[in-house]
Amino acid sequence: MVMEKIPAPTFRVFQKFEETSKREGLFPEKGVVIAGVSGGVDSMLLLAFLKRVSKSIPFHLTACHLDHQIRGEEARLDRELVKSFCEAASIPLQIFSVDIPLYAAKMKMGLEEAGRIKRRELFEKAGEEQLKILNLVGEYRIALAHHMDDRAESILMHIGRGTGLRGLVGIRYIDGPYIRPLLDIRRSEVEEAASALGLPWRDDRSNVSDEFLRNRIRNQLIPAWEETVGYDPTPLIVRLGDLAFHDDEALEELATESFRKALLPDFSLSVSSLMSLPYALYSRVIQLFYLTMAEPQEGKKRAPRELTTMQLETLRRLSEDIQSGKQTRAQLSWPGGSVVTIAEGRIWLSWPDKTNE
Image (tube, rainbow, N blue to C red; front, top):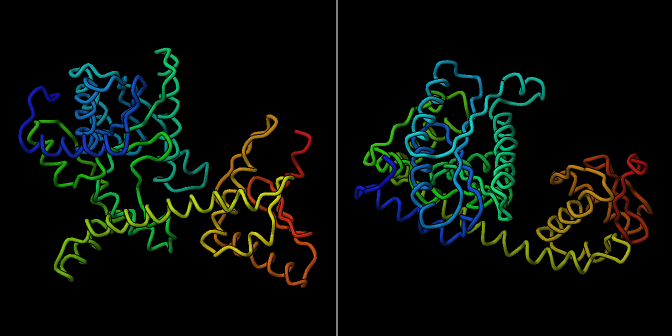
């Protein structure tokens, strides 16, 4: 069951898994890998692959399962399947249970977002705890089972929301501690490999419900696209994501250099340097400036998040007004209680209500 011998269909998919992992440098040596396992076919195959590769790469594997308290008996069966598999494969397992509907209502957010936030919180905590328990000085990574079709769906969702270049990348191979070794593998390949290997899994009925946007894209939009144009768009959508990734990476490097040049000794930004940049670099420099300045300082904890397009455009418009002499000074409220001030050819950030914390 845990891949002592690999059938041919599974071996072909496992080779892709290994190629992706090596190319992207996904696994930490002498570290910890937390596998997010729902009991679905993709996460069960991921877990089986991780178990096998952990024999050649010295990392410690632990599975984590989260019961969202949404699906009642179905969720109990998911949990029992994951538990049984991990016991048979000698894989350590942590099971979490969180009332996601209650949390979502309390935080005034959707179920999908609430589930994602709690998963990240619990899985990251599990990674940190495993490093301490095992007395390791290495890293932890959290392996998620997103595949190529998931990435294409995410890109289309982002396009529908008017995304920029970063959103066109879609799901990334590495995103902080999160890794996605199945990202070059199609959903059909996942199912074929798991079947050939004889893996158990459970189907989540919510994946076929058109209540969720992702499901409507998967079940309606992509099939309609294929029927209309006569080809499967998924590989080409993912190719668009790859091109966007390389462009975004290049712009980030240029923005880092532009940020260094625009940063003044008092940690403000030069307005003239900023306004000489094309918008693609300007927006990235401002984001970098905000995220850098909003990092915890002198024991103060702030939670920086990216600025919105409206905030960036408002700052640029006010900077233009001040540079042209229409205004001499302007201030804007930014996230985390911060205030951005534009005056005397400079832009700087302050936290007036946190000075005495």
